[in-house]
Image (cartoon, rainbow, N blue to C red; front, side, top):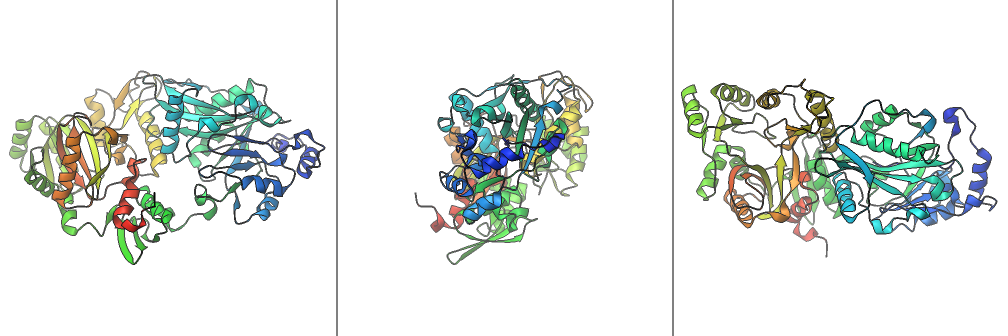
Length: 581
């Protein structure tokens, strides 16, 4: 998300006449206005060019042409964008985002107190590293603090939201004081780069960051705050409407580059793909590989390059045989193959009559129930310790497959290892969906808020279902949907860590124990599958103990960014397309 401001506001928004004469004089660039000198500021990810300070459209277009590789420059407050675009129509485009403004005279302070985090300025190398990790996770450009225009020269300030319990950076925003930046006669300010960790369990982080910036600039005697937001970002627009922002008729111009490509090309055939297919298609486009989307809803596409043709459904391709796919889908077959390969596995049997099920439960004390052929965590229940819960879980699992599997339950962390071309490419600990109490909202409301954030961050792929398994987890903790947790208390609301049911990932690729790496490669070779996601229960990522749980023939590569999963996948399909180092 990004945002920005205007030096010559449309006072019509509050019933006042705009300073039209001043604007025309500035656009004319006749030197009569002291603010005519071209102004730009570097924000760490690119420059903000103050459009009306450039003497003519050609000068502004020429300045945009100096954009550095890997950066994103933005010319804002361009009163006559068509004249700028005419100077370089092949290189420039009109930003399709909406610009909003809040007059501080319309602002009303929050009526509720937000707890569990604090707002402070970014000031250390570790702060910038945390902010960049957050920005990369949200598909934004990272910040190079060495490039930022110093504050005494009018440069921006970055604020961050820090969790009070663990010190994690859970949000960030950039603000710009226009009076200091370019002697704005209208005393404005702007908001940019608002981002909140999609796995954050604290409610209200984005709202508090925006309010903090508003109140900070109000205390400096400024008059308004502007921001820019993608026209289809409904979640953000609801927040801004709640705070009193209104549409501002002004324009921004950007340069055509790989970063901005979706904005000037518009939705292509890949627009309807889910994130797991889109990440592969985008990598193919970068390499000049021809892409044909066969069925966006199903994630089906065909790649063509150098006379080679490969059909894919997300990360499942022609390279995976039907036999290997069957070995992964049928969890009892997976168990037999991996057991024969000498790997560590849980005890397992098919659910049968009540006596057999009870005997298995008594032998192992705690049981996992799952459909024999299932995916995305559907129908899975874990740590069942009584026959009543076991019977209910079996009936629920039968909604997804008439054949239901019982496994011995093993305590530990849920580890996903991605193997491509029989090499480990990524590994992550998967944590179950959880919430943190604020002393005000009921658990049900906190779950719904967390679920909305996960859905927004994953394109609707991840949400926390309010089903029997969630309720069973709550009841086991002695709470229910209407319980209000004390402020700061964390509660897991699911027992499985599947991402489709609201779980989140912690990348552990760099510290994966060699024994786990070896076990994952051996499992992939035993299944004879070139691309696979392997699930294990482990004590820790850097310890050798493990128990294999299952194999996934269609692993979600998008879940493991910034690890190069899509790059390695396309390398496997088209080895000669690898970029030259």
